[in-house]
Length: 122
Image 1 (spheres, rainbow, N blue to C red):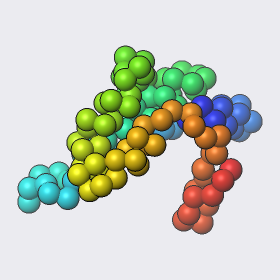
Image 2 (cartoon, rainbow, N blue to C red; image 1 turned 90 degrees about the horizontal axis):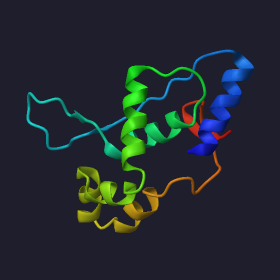
Image 3 (cartoon, helix red, strand yellow; image 1 turned 90 degrees about the vertical axis):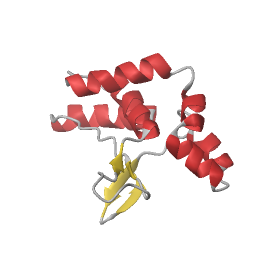
Image 4 (tube, one colour; image 1 turned 180 degrees about the vertical axis):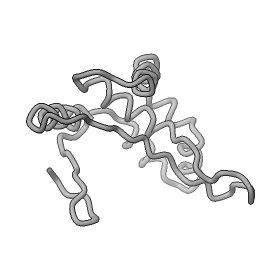
């Protein structure tokens, strides 16, 4: 995530543009008929907070809240994701190791970029 923020900072300076970070969320398969199926995803929200905390420049109030959530939770991210709705759902499906792996911060320097409808290494 630091690698992504570092590259975003470089692009921001090079292009003279703003950076937007979108916390995606996920669709809830068992939502009620009239209920919104999109739910916030704690791992995406905290991931956005990590990236935003490392970006230079001014921040929106929404970005500040994501950063605050990350700063408050940074010493227990693995536990929070493990116990989250999506973490429990994945564990119940037998993907415990995926939850453990994806709860780690800064384990890669790969920065993905969307190119022709697929992610590639930047």
